[in-house]
Image (cartoon, rainbow, N blue to C red; front, side):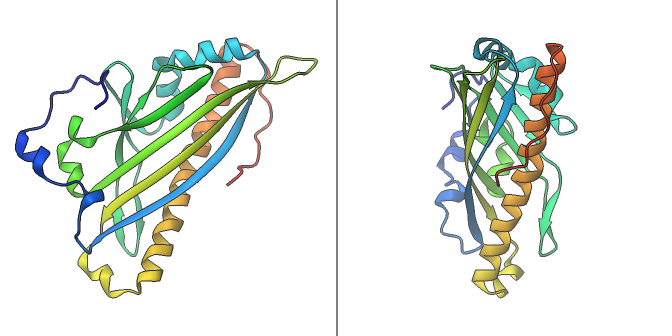
Length: 213
């Protein structure tokens, strides 16, 4: 349970229902992967950290055009857009909490869907764990590298007809779709945070780096 999210608890009947990640339904598939990238910030780590601490400003600006709604003090609900495969489309909505930094490390973790939209637990389940580390570089000019890592798993209940396809095809196509979603969303968010930081501090923004995934 995430303490800073203040939405009411679900009904007891909902708590007794297993989430998709614990389901034995053959239609449920799990797709997971790991990702890493970095942002270059032309400023000392202390200034970059102060910017990241005030996420109520930059997070909404940089997540656009994704729909973002606040959830408690540090949480947000994001509607990511429409994605599909095999003619099956979903419009994922996830809850994320941006935890206060600890020793220069910022973590982002999943808010359980029962805290903001209980019906989603019957369609898909997401486990999102990200860590951002600030590494100040020794250089003539101030430079901080923000390195981030993401472990992402998604459980989704597919239509029965997809079960007629070869298992290897269903799994590989789902893994590919997951990577596409992360490339589209996380990479764009990385660029926007980098550009927003430099714009708000009247600094020249470094050129965009090629994604490492």
